[in-house]
Length: 441
Image 1 (cartoon, rainbow, N blue to C red):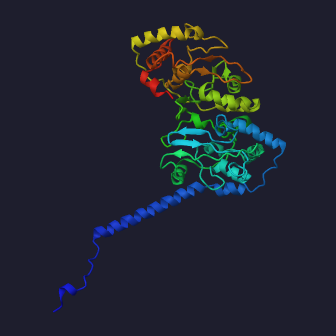
Image 2: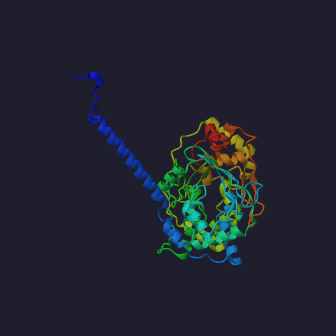
Image 3: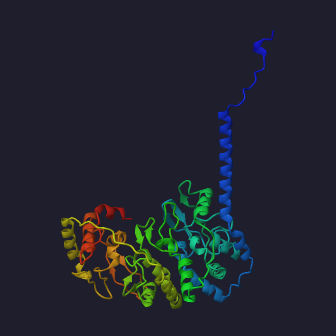
């Protein structure tokens, strides 16, 4: 008889359940590989065509081309991000806070090791249009290539010629400080696959040349959508062409809708008033403060009148939203009475007992849509930190408002803002001390 202990065991056939598990695992692996391939393809979609277009030799760096590049750099406010406070112009190092961490601007000077010195015009064009560095790395959209992708090859070459004409500054680029998984190229590739596609500006045949020039500047180098389009939870701009407003991440300011008469739409403004605002920071219809004041100071005051006129024409033609005002319950009587006393003590001397302001100096508050917007964020920032229009060639000594952060507490600031949002026929919502705290930097 055969000894059972010496027999060779025979493996049992796999069960139906185990076979199904293997098939499911293989399906998941194939699905993951297909998703990875799709993300990879979406990240290079159109890049070959752009690179083929880039084989045309760029124009020689003539004095005119460099001058044009300097003008375009102003229009794009490149120095605003790529110059650290106290640092050399365009040498990078400025930390830009985002909800995902801090991104540090890169060195745009022609230093060979740390800047653009080893770059070609084609590589610069690819960065502008496709958000990819010279070494192939994907760039974070804090560098607004989502807008710059519409910049023409000629303007890209002019910008590159200007940047190459700057003094070289040896300043190594600082690594970004981003949380996982946002610090990975894989996560950035997925984001780009979802929210970015390289493109070039295509003029609208049914619009005038002036409108198209304005659209090109607003959508492209002006990158107005970076603030005025708002962002979703993953940091992508919403309704980039509509410019329907949104909170500016990490700054606690609100970029009002440029397509709503209740916020910052200019459809009913004269073209001259829009140009004046962009050129001087002030106009009979309003003033620029906060982040927009910086844009005027660093950028739009240097744009020539023809281009400003084109931008005004485009902005005036934006399709307008029809937004009903939010229902606002009546505030507490004690808050209103406290706000009235604070207004008389701190505000009436400049803005007037009836909120009428002083022409050419202090803006009227009565009937001012900046006062009655649904979001009180900009009012909070102005009272806390002061309100200052930019100093420009056309308005070199603007009037300003002092900060009240050390004079009033959150409850008092909420009270005075509630008062001005309800006085003189206004019916905007009350402001709570919690909202004041939430909108502080």
